[in-house]
Every structure is written in C-alpha cells, then in structure tokens.
Length: 403
Image (cartoon, rainbow, N blue to C red; front, top):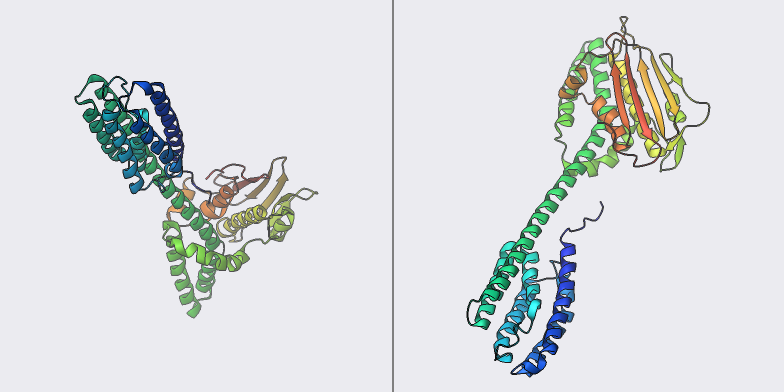
C-alpha cells in the first residue's frame, strides 16, 4: 500500500518558516529601537534565549508527534514571559511592540495545529491576557491584535480537525475497497471450481438416483449456502490472506494455466484447449502477446463464459449450444469475443442471477476484466444467442473497466 501523506504536514512546514521569520523580525525591531529602551540589557538576554530556543526546537514543530504537550507548555510560557518582560524593558512605553513581537503567534498556531481549534483558542487567550497586562488596559490596538491571533488560530485549528477527519474517512474507505477486491478475487476462484463441481455433483446425482441422488441433494444445499456466503460478502477479511495462497493452486485447476511471472505469453496457447466439437476458435496467425498474469485472468474469464454456455445455453435436445471464440489483436488492446447460438437471455436475467447469488458474470467475468483495467460487455437477444466481448489493454493500469 502506498504511504499516506498527511495533509497537515504543509502546515507544520509553514509554522517552521513563520517562527524563523518572526524571530528575525523581533530582533530587527529591537536593534532598530535599542537606544530608546529604558532597560535594554534584559531584552538582549531574552532575545538571545529566544534565538537559541527557536533554532534548537525546529525539529519539534515538524510534526504533531514531535510537538509534545511539554514543548507546547514551555513554548507558550516563553512567549508570555517575553510579553510581560516588555513592561520593564520598555518602561516608558515609547516603542510599542513587545520584545518577541509577532513571534508569539507561533506558539498559538502550534497549539491549533496540534490540538485543533479548542487548543488554539486556549493559546490565543493566554497571549491575549498577557498583552492586556502588558498594556495595563484594553486598548483598541491590543484588542485588534488579540482578535486577529484568536481568529487565525481557531480557523487553522478547525481546518486541521476537518483534514484529520477526512484522512480517517479516506483510510477507512481504502481498507474497505481493498477487502472487497480481495473477497471478489477469492469469490471468482470459488465460482470457477467449487461451485461448478457442486452443481455437477447435484446434476449427476439426481440423474443416477438412489444414494447418489441424496449426495446430489446435499451438494445442491451446499452450493446454495456457498453462493449466499459469496454474494453477501460474509467471508472474513483475515481468512482472505491466509487461505488465498492455499486455495489458488487447487482452484486454478478449473481455469487456464499460463506461465508464472509478468513476462508476456501467447494468449492463443491458453485458449486452444477450449477447442472442441462444440467450440470453434478463430485466432490470428501471429502470436497474441499479453502479460502472463493478465493472460491467465483473461483466459479464466473466457472459461467462465464457456461454462455459462454449457450450463445455460442448451438446445431442444438438451445438448450445449455451439460456441465460437474470436481472438483479435488490436494495436492497444486484446479483444476476445465469446458467442453462442443458444436461446439467449431474457431481459433482467443477469440482475436476477446476481440477486440469487449466481455471480458468474459479475465476478468471474466482469470482476476479472475490471481488475485488469479492461471491460466486459454482454449482448443477448432472446432466440438469437449471447455474445460476451472481453477487452484488455496491453499496457498495465490502462484504466478501470466497466463493472
């Protein structure tokens, strides 16, 4: 999974820059009015301490984890101490700005980014009270500065809270999507093998009668239960990672096998085993190369389409309908069309099948093509057969397919 980047990280970087600029501004103002201070030496000592503190604690304002509560308490204490010290240093009140000047907004913003708008409001209140004490009265400029810092800290704190909530929602959605895709991949494998075998046992047992009929009845019950489990999404998330590796080897026997790895392979070799008395394959004379993993998935989707033909597209004599596989090698994609001359599908049959837990088209065909960035389109006209068109882009990550 790709590393998740925090949306609040740019705010911490901006705060780091602000503290440095605020420090530079405070030192510049103090040097400019140095000869007008009543007691300039304590101010020099304070600014020296403030400079060391700001530079040493730069790593502390790089993230919420490093910006601890203890650091915030010391930071706001240093800001308040600088404001109150201004009463003695600028005893005549002829300079105006406090010794730390605009630097004091840095600790307040750190409160807001760390703990949200409530913490920001507390930090702004502490600095505001210190400014009122330093002035000795609530003046218009003091009130203006206090409100400005308060509004800025509350606004930034609120934005941070919304951003964190959005991050949590996004992380939860990504987890759900990952779990859903894992479940669908496992469900496709189950459909391609276990459900097919249970359905066959049910049909053969019923036809043979006797004890075999009872076995067929039990197989039919298990097929219904397993279809319900797959379609309702009740497969435990932790079982996917533990069982998938073990199941893939045995379940893949129902589909086509291809070379391992990501090297290209000839798709014709994976489709050729389907050729038979009732399945005709039409393919180019040249190799149709596709990444091995994508070729295997595409071949498995073709196998699922042919399974649907054998099970559902039967003629009046009960035999499967005739099927054709057309393989086309396009410049940017591989196109496979599976067509049959069966009775076709009634309108709304696919939606009814999904509701009944029969997920062949939804998972084994469309789900596979979607994971490959391709598309699967089904066209069926009652009395004229069914056609399934499978398209897979040759380049990986070619986009999300049609579900």
